[in-house]
Image (cartoon, rainbow, N blue to C red):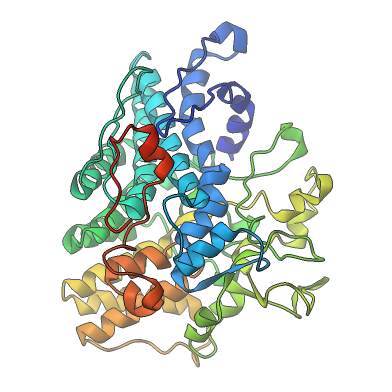
Length: 495
């Protein structure tokens, strides 16, 4: 897992790149020399690129803002924790937030900081002696810029498009249209894809770095959001036929440490915790969701809702692989007390006992037992297969749609032929509903449900009167950022 090790070694240098209050993080970087730091020139280029990856672990991008924006809003997750903890998370759950909500603001600034890091890396790489290695680093940086912009455009709509490092006295740009923002993301991913290696050719040394399959998968998802079904189908078909990924991992093992970067992993945020590193390269993603109370595994936010539990088909093993139930054993020796604060918790972020007991894993003040080492699965192969099924359905290709749907359900069945019957309908509305259901269950608690509801036009029906059509399709632009821009930024409709 080379990315983790190199990131740890170089992050002390990269932490010197402090942020300003501006949403585009325009404060100039320091003038430390290569000789001062003791790194080779190529290591410094690589360090700048790795900083764009490392930022995915930041609190604003991976923790409370992430689970609040993408999951607690979805109806398939409740706020969790205690009634009085994080009123701002409660606002997200109830759609009572406004442009001053701190979690929304953090999601906005955190992802724009990622854009800034990618632009900084690209600016740095432009000064390097040009060779194949530098070209790949440029592709990685543009992939990461596209990823951060994708996070932003889904939440806020058209964004200020920044394709270079802004100088201190340079005016922040105005917002571009939704279509122009998606075009910018698409251009970055189209540039990156042919230059990036396939997963198999890159090998384990490339774990956590962008690959051709990852770039195609995110490009396909961009097309999915734009309802360009033919391009989404073409790209996901290329990924499927590449043979780079498969669904061989049992569903209840996918989110264990042993299966990180496994055959289903298209792209995931690399996290770890080892006292030999001398510093953390983990995240608080699992901590903010972990079982609250005497087990001391986390803060207990973003818990599965009763609505999600009721949506599982009878006997679906994915239910027990996704949900921890109060008053039951998660594994031998780990009983969730019957009086735990919440009836359910997210099992996909559970830190298994054998993971906690690994050598050199430091339990300083109990913090590290909260799963800081758990990788964040941002793009799974099952997502790609279901995107292919959805696109095929919308194109009227029911044969392919059914085949891809069955691929996912076969793995979920786990060999039990008495559950999860094969979907055989060729009626487009019924098949569409089946695919939508499968995405909900297969990707439960994985940051897709809310944005799926919005793009399908189903949010008002599913989320009820608290979700206001013509307003809640987008989150408000943080008021502080509008103020800092001097009015250049404009607010979304309804806010």
